[in-house]
Image (cartoon, rainbow over all chains, first blue to last red; front, side, top):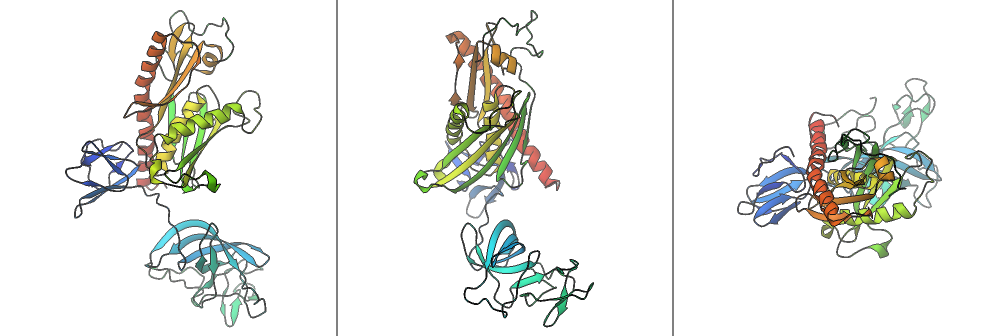
Amino acid sequence: MLSKQPGKTPDTYVLPGDEVGISEEYVPGRNVADEEGKLYSLAFGRIQKDDKRLILSVKTGKEKLRPRTGDIVFGQVIRDSKGVQTVRVGGYADKQGDLHEIDFTGLIREPRGRRDDRILPILVGDYVRAKIIREGDVPELGILSPNLGVVMALCSNCRTPLIRDPPGLKCPNCDYKEQRKIASDYGIVLLPREGGVEAGSR
Amino acid sequence: MGTQSDIKLIEENGLRLDGRNPGDLRPIKIEAGVLNRADGSALIEWGGNKVLVSVYGPREAYPKHNQDINKAIVKARYNMAAFSVDERKRPGPDRRSIEISKVLSEALESAIMVEQFPRAQIDVFIEVLQADAGTRIAGLTAAAVAIADAGIPMRDFVTGCTAGKVNDKVVLDLSKEEDNFGQADLPIAILPKSKKIVLLQMDGDLSLEEFDTATSMIINAISRINEIQRNALSAKVKVDDAGGE
């Protein structure tokens, strides 16, 4: 325990079983138990005191983030098998626009019955912005809106980041031309609440 | 308990084969948060034991017929690596590891606030990398740290220690030779705050007086071991605050 004294200040770490206060002063909140007038921590985490509502709780920092349908995620395509792309997701923006770090795998399926040349491909190694269209153990992702799709792609020849060359993409190194289902802001990705972070080459 | 023999496990000066006094513990080192992919993890080095514990959950219990509508189920899996002992151990569960997994699950369940997670399961994987007597207790002690590291609410830590009888003398924290050739082995795990016993097994014979002596030795040692558990988590906070993550 970092401090053994009761009545700890906020931002103090506590361990299970530590005395964190008395029930005359605070109501036990999340991860806090009241035992004979004393409040004990039930988890390893930071004390949070809500002095307005007089609630004392312990925040563990291990609360699992669960992306919901409609959340926007960012990830990299790691596998392409029979029209199903596997994406390793590294971050997601919730509906409030906050960006969170996360680690899970999602799938992008080719729309059924629309397998023709008008559907532009995404390839292994591409970085994509996608929307969660179905939750589950392996969430399904969609990239059909104009702001969704590839935000950075690498040249299939020399792995140099591709630049826009309407109507497609071009490698600045070997001039190889490629097609992708790109997002409208390909090359300059505006991350939510981050004020425009340049992720691509240009 | 292994085979009884006339091997001298305690010298004339009262010291044990490894130079310890009867009430001494072997060196213990615990490190929390050693695995990135697990929700919580810990590595314990207790004498010659090396045990790695990872915790996943609480998550929806599968198969669904195992779900308890009132509480989470704790599934501990104790496993000895093939290379953990002198002669290669055949991999996979055996009678001993199934029994240990069961008693460890029950010990951990009494400390975790399982009522908060109906229909869920908490998986605790206890992998013995190197065995040197007292692996179940080392695994259980590290499991409590890993569960706390996973942010799972618990009433208290679970802390354990063994005692036993060697050359007619009660000693704390048996080494491999003492475990193999001693007369009795008594692993106990306790919730340190409430002093509630959550695991007690005994192999061999102890008189009532010897049992009382062994128990009080263990209870004394447990406060020291609990301090090591708490320090492991505190050390993790210091590393995180210093930007070590």
